[in-house]
Image 1 (cartoon, rainbow over the protein chains, first blue to last red):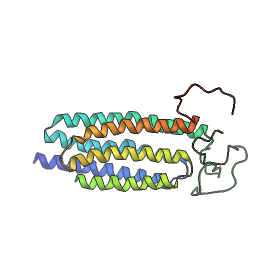
Image 2: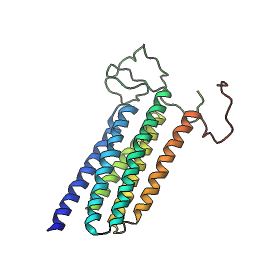
Image 3: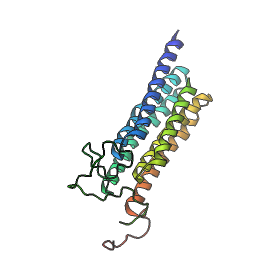
Length: 139
Length: 94
């Protein structure tokens, strides 16, 4: 009886985590530029990994080995600390590297070939138009 | 049930790898690699439960550490051109 309830809860948590993970990954493929993709990636890190590891945590709590749950919480806490830091670092580097955020009006410097709703780049924001910046390129 | 979750994580890793290959800027690739690392942490944890050996969680913790440090290192390399291990460069030469 108790095991059935725990199994159901674990199923729900794992399925929800998988749903968020798939959604974030599809968003990371389909969204138009690096900042919007960061938004999708944050969903994978927060909800996807969070719900999946929470499901594992519930399972291991019911299974008896308590140290496993402690380690899962440690992994989760570390992920939740480092993922915003890494995303913020990527955003800061992308901004200072000359990528301008994608807007609907068609300013799409650095947005790549799958930017939707194209048009002439806004002349007022002429950041470097070459989005691809080589590694170690000292510009 | 853990196998289903592992399969979902693997599909998501394929999608993120697609972005890492396609991504027009270097930042897209770094973001996708960071994301693949996060999914690898989750995959290691889930696979430990699939095999009935949750000891793999220590590996997941270590991988999370390495993933974060690696992302920051690659970003710093893209940003500054080196990792700052050498003597401080004279500025203004660029």
